[in-house]
Image 1: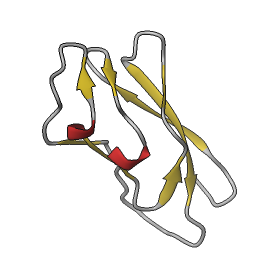
Image 2 (image 1 turned 90 degrees about the vertical axis):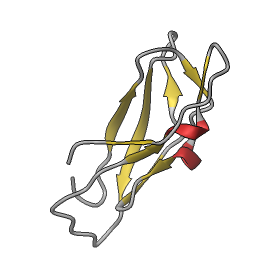
Image 3 (image 1 turned 180 degrees about the vertical axis):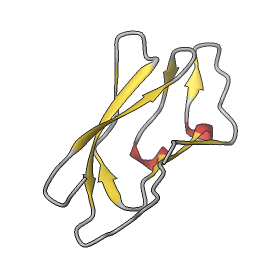
Length: 84
């Protein structure tokens, strides 16, 4: 992905969740738009815009799970990292 281009990032959960926002997502070499959920709240998407002049041969996105809640009111724990 090069500067001036964007791509869609998809975050998938095994059950419906609420509360996911940009403060829960660490994207070290770019910025993400606010994530939007599908009707079932299991698939969330955001637009990734890379940082200009960043060259990252490895890059992951980390989601802080303590910022989300399932329908039973349970708060997530830990974090989840994307593949490179």
